[in-house]
Length: 81
Image 1 (cartoon, rainbow, N blue to C red):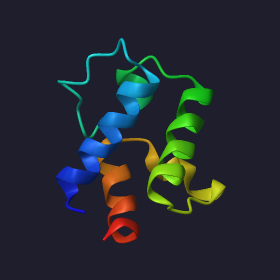
Image 2: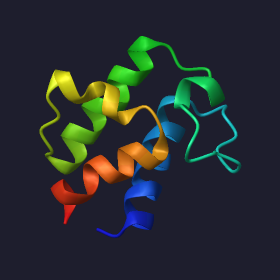
Image 3: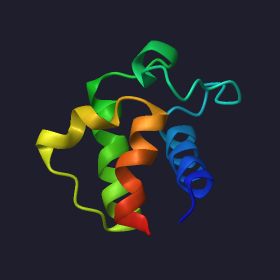
Image 4: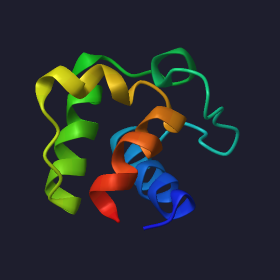
């Protein structure tokens, strides 16, 4: 997958988890929690959905590496290529 395809996949998951959020102006460098009304369960839902849809193993120690869109794309890129 390309970076843009990964980004769009994450946006699709975010829109499923937080359907009322406006994701059109998402800043890829800013933490998701600073931009969206996400709690810790929402963050877990995002990770679980990534694991389910794309069969990617994300160890618990790596959850913090998925705090921004840029970091998430960078993390997922080698797993989804």
